[in-house]
Figure 1 (tube, each protein chain N blue to C red):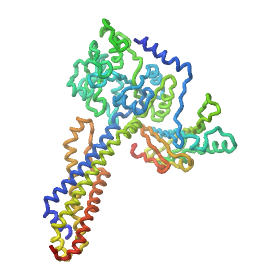
Figure 2 (cartoon, rainbow over the protein chains, first blue to last red):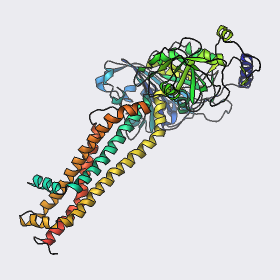
Figure 3 (cartoon, chains in turn brown, orange):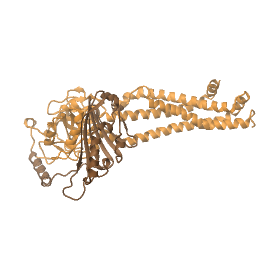
Figure 4 (cartoon, rainbow over the protein chains, first blue to last red):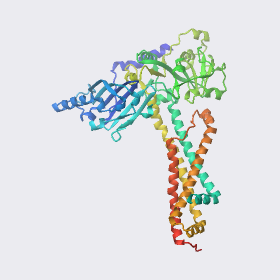
Length: 177
Length: 416
């Protein structure tokens, strides 16, 4: 029986091997993703947002102005505490920050413009991580095209999901503890 | 003065007032009871699984994966190959991983193949572990551990033989390899109560003689021969994962979701539970709306009794006016009476709720696995009570204004 199954598995996978693996992440304009992980004093964030939200365009940068816009956006993203404001009482400091613009390649259809996404990763050290009672989002003031952030928070007690909208840019975390 | 007057007036109409108070009390008790069950159900729902950071299965939807892996509702679209499972298990950020294999059943209960680590890592109700009420957690190949509901429904005891059927609700039973019940788990209020747990190898073992879903005739491997076999599964249904640190949760989730050799899905149980509650939670809103309407009905009933009392009390009002009471005082008296009635009703309702909770708590816990905590009223509940009292004041204003007008037009004499 073992043999039958593995043979079938082989047959089933052969066509997939002939072609390449194709998969694309979902991409929704106006909606960014922010994942926050908290473990003791260490806090890590991953941020992802469509190029349209951050710089207003998703084509490959052509003009000087486009390049300047992207550089400015990356520089802004490198300062996460001005986008995702953690309470002062938590005494958080950025230990690492990286941000870049990634474009999804559409190699088979050259000429068709793909989507671009900004990706950023931050790590913080929060002396009083117990005081992480809320997160404010000046992010929405900085980037006018952003409408919503889908926030997921993982702690030692489990994971929770929230949606932060432009109208109410504040996340209450008190229920997590 | 007005206080004594109101009390005496209510006492004089004890029967109607008592009925009104009872109606308000029952409606308040119903509302608060629904509120308790609602929050209790939500809490016990989100407490179904805790301590697990990720659940991995075939790529489908997060709610679907949660439903079949945790709630044992529905089926997997695909299995996860043993190779992929081992790939994931070998990752440095995986602290522990528990495989789950579903697909067989015993009577109406699902059989789940897993490892002994399941009992160590599966947590519910904020970190509570599974405990054996009787017997031991399995260690032999043909040992089965059953949930509390399985034991109660089928009246099984430790040591009883148990036959596992192939597939769900199928009539072909694997009667050549009888399992033995080695332990019965304590009631948890989770789907584990309705599960028969066997080892992963046992799931393989019962399928040794089964080729393409049909038992080969005249071929039956003896129990001893099966014991001697190497029973590594080809595939599992899903796996529960604990990460070394929450900081790695998202990276691991992404790595699994982007695993190119096999389409896999990793979900955060807490987030998937929230998604699922978003779907089933509509019923809770409906329930709340209905019980709110019951309170409104009780208040309207109170308004009706005040209205009908007005004509009886015209003489009384006239006497009060003759004694020097202003029409405003009459309004105040009626509103105050209403507030007193609803306050008494609300307090009585609260008393009903606590009596009901004390009586029903153990019954609900054992019947539905729903734990309703008995605790001081929450801020929300106090607001509800205050809102009921406030609403009664507003509602009673309507008959009170009528009384105000008639007491002016009637003057000090009732002309009938």
